[in-house]
Length: 231
Image (cartoon, rainbow, N blue to C red; front, top):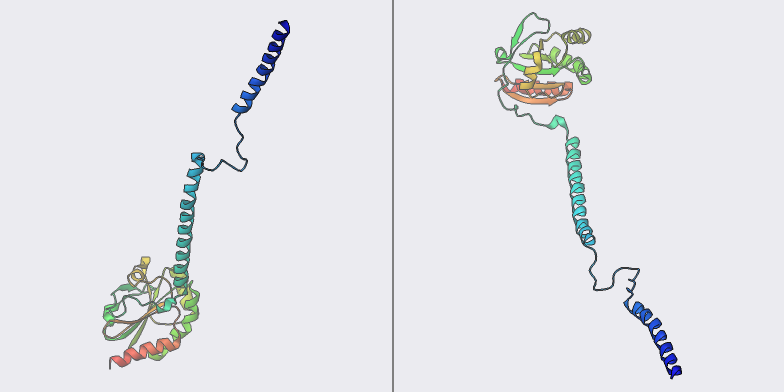
């Protein structure tokens, strides 16, 4: 009898030792695949947020690139245009009147008093390299047309009186040279750089505007055209 009890006790020990191990093996969490969650499982919400942000970021980058490309194209187009070909809104209209003192302080000149003559108004400055290049052409045109009903007016633009007088003394020219205090006349005429020259007919209407240095050929052609139109 005791042998049977001993055998039963041994069997119970064996079953008790193996029981927890089996439960432990059955209850242990199965490891996930190292490559990620199994098919059908739902990932962490942060992964969904990151995925939704990626298209928005690329749209933003594309918009910025397109804007930069458009701006560059517009800038290149503007720089490629010849400023001498820009038509002034004053062309074809009566020239704005002005009364300005001469640079030497000896008198004043009023544009309206010159009606009936061809008037060439040249905006210039002593610091302007293109004006120095242009000056011999003005001298030649003045010598040719001064006795043919043509008046050349030089308007000193954003310059010092002393420097302007020294410039004229150096390069010569006895046409009326006018001071433009505060650049107000230049502003009315839409001057944004010198030299700029306006050709005004006998009727007081601006027929042509030149931006940049005027050649002798351009000066003589414009003046001759205005003289001929008034005959």
